Image 1 (cartoon, rainbow, N blue to C red):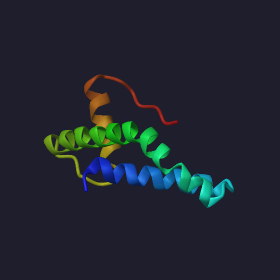
Image 2: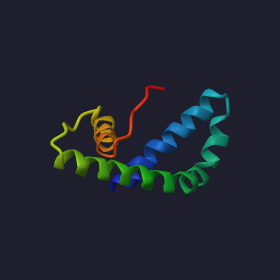
Image 3: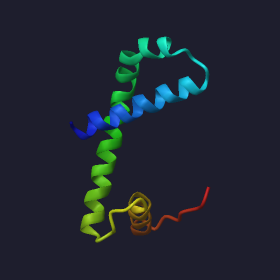
Image 4: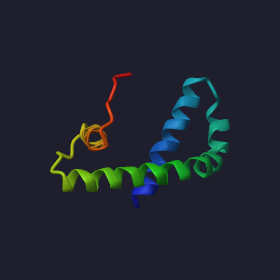
Length: 88
């Protein structure tokens, strides 16, 4: 299974869970499966591309591949660009 397919499955599952938590009947959610996949596939592709780019930068800069990796890479990039990070 490709990374995009896995990310898409996760995104579809998450969307279905959100609808179920809102009280939408399972039958209605199941009917929209194809619609979810069509809508979420571009987002899944973008997320995988971003992850691969961040991972490549992390390897090159010897940044640990853990849950903090995306943030650590972004901090490095901001530092290199002389931008400041502010906490939200």
